[in-house]
Amino acid sequence: MASTNDYAVIKTGGKQQRVSVGDKICIELLGSEPGQEVKFDHVLALRTDGSLQVGSPNISGACVKGTVIRNGKGEKLNAFKKLRRKGMRKKIGHRQNFTEVSIDSLN
Figure 1 (cartoon, rainbow, N blue to C red):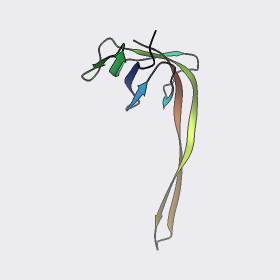
Figure 2: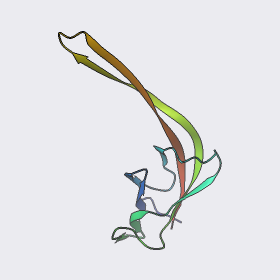
Figure 3: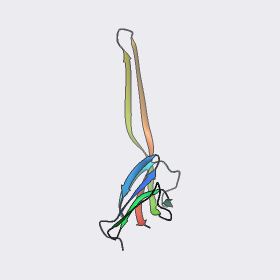
Figure 4: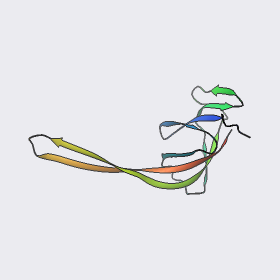
């Protein structure tokens, strides 16, 4: 049974996330269907039972398992470019795809 102080630092989508059992995180799109189990093998740090393991860069044999809750799109971000006195205005919108994952276990 994992205690409330246990956590792991994983790397996914070029970003690092600190996760614990029961957390729900939004990460870059994985391409998995809702309900599927996913494994994160790039574990950079792992704290269990009061001891901290730090990898260089990864901890061999460590794995974090989670379940995909849903895939979706984030909020719309608008970029606006303008050149003064030239009459040039350009508006660009973007919505980033994401996957929401529930963390089940730290190994």
